[in-house]
Amino acid sequence: MAKMRTRIATLLAATAVTVGATLGTGAGTAAAAPRLTVQTSWYQDTHSVVAYLYADGKYAGYVNWNADPVGTDPGDALRANDDAADGWGVKGIITNAWVYREASTQGHSSPYTTSWKTGDLDEGQRLSLDVCLVKGSEQVCSRGLPVRS
Image 1 (cartoon, rainbow, N blue to C red):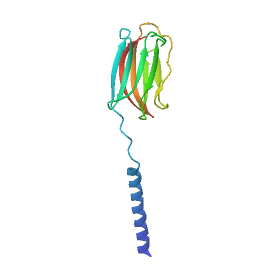
Image 2 (cartoon, one colour):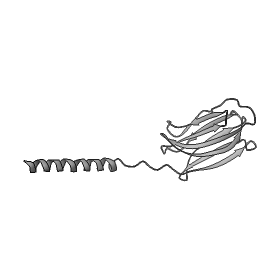
Image 3 (tube, rainbow, N blue to C red):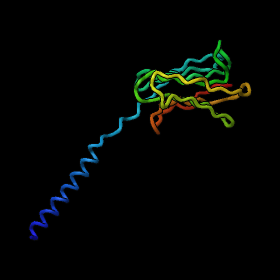
Image 4 (cartoon, rainbow, N blue to C red):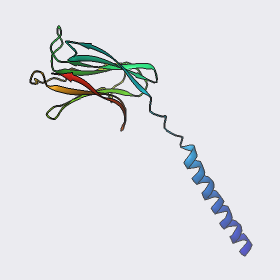
């Protein structure tokens, strides 16, 4: 009887270890965040920019900041575009001590372009543009592109 209890205890312990190891390794690991590279196209005397985002060298989308109106596009305006169905969204954030403006495609299927995020700003304010790839609570960003209102 004691041998039987010992065998059952050993079997249960071995099963628990096996199940723990299986759950720990069988769940898989999340894919690593992509390496973000950015190419910029400046206009309006370098106050405005289109920042093209690349995830591991593949085009992902863009973030656009317009300091002044261009054709039918408004001024003091930010938008983001996601062109890659890779699970990562595109986000742009304009900031300084008094301004916070964000445009994000997160939660939308690609391809998707946000509406312009607008609001009048005093002319000539120095601003910083951060551009990011976002997925859930993860984000990979390039920070501090200098722009103006």
